[in-house]
Image 1: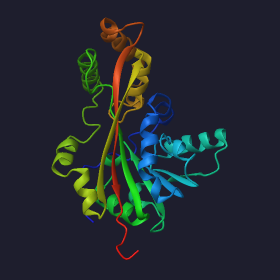
Image 2: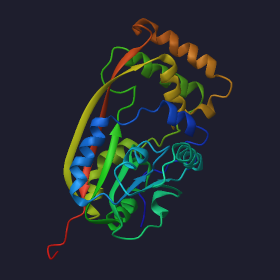
Image 3: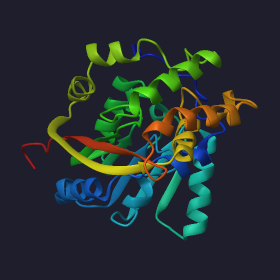
Image 4: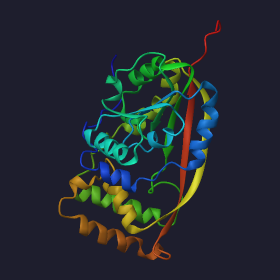
Length: 276
């Protein structure tokens, strides 16, 4: 199958997995509760967190499923997952290092597949078709999302966005992310690609939760992104952090800025054959 999605470098998150785990916000509990409620009737035997990163979804799902696979192509991310498993004593979570399109899993196997902030980095058509085959009849796919601190409302966000653009230019990082990413997704929406693979959209659930960012927390979040990872800063992290603190100073109250973080999931199901 020809992949017409923009291709990301295979090692965008190399060297940032621990920062990602520390500074990326967990999904709001309301999202997890609603997701389990929406997908509960299929049973909760096996779940797959595809493009799992450090396991932000996999670990919370482990309480509700007999078996959870945590799959990511970045070795550093899988190392973090393995370390967290060892420290937590969780026995039903299985880390797998593999690109989504190369994962070997049986057909009719998973009750739930979740993809958190990662589907856009995958060859979507190929992965959607594989997910459709992996799901049991009546099983679900949830594309989970959370907003980034430079998006959405907030009087401090224009200054923050300008800071990021300036540092992308200073570090020669303007092309870390494919330039045609948004245009491709607008022309070929995720929903259309997934439905073409045979899954049926059952709607979207959206949530908001306020978060108080410190300048240090925002720096950590940026260091764990694909477009300004800490690995490209070299010895300029202190300079960046001073610049960040200075630009945010007019907006700080008690040392923080407030962000209304948006969370959502788009839910799809594999139809149950009429003769069952």
